[in-house]
Length: 152
Image 1 (tube, rainbow, N blue to C red):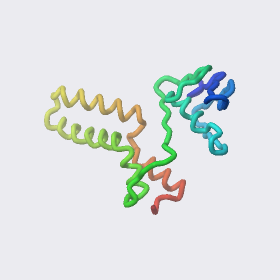
Image 2 (image 1 turned 180 degrees about the horizontal axis):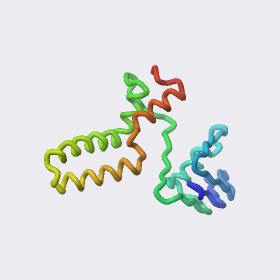
Image 3 (image 1 turned 120 degrees about the vertical axis):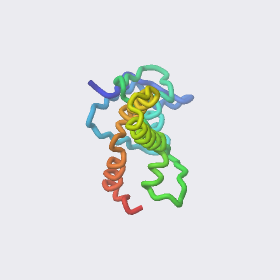
Image 4 (image 1 turned 45 degrees about the vertical axis):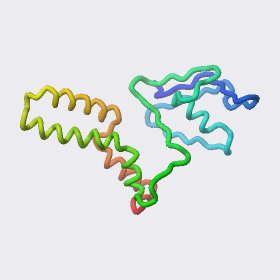
């Protein structure tokens, strides 16, 4: 089953046709590159997949439980941060959830019957699982190494 399908998708802005009954499918494990000149519809295509830009016709089907994200083309990072620090800053929600999970886990050792701790831990686990973030640090390091950005 595809992670995402774009079926007979059409989108235009005024007279300019950006997508004309386009079809697209992405399966688990595939790597995809979108290449084109400026203004040719790459961002529009991605925004339709994200669901942030409605199609004029056609449909997008996403596998349940899967999400799509897109990095902004113009990111405003603090120039004093390393690449790793900038990434961590953008992933603050995940890092905060992991930190809170660890704190609550320690508190739970002292008070194992505290239902509030158990409920919050369950909520945090669901969030962390949904983002596949238990080993986020090693994932960041791997990507930085692959792009030769570790030293920056």
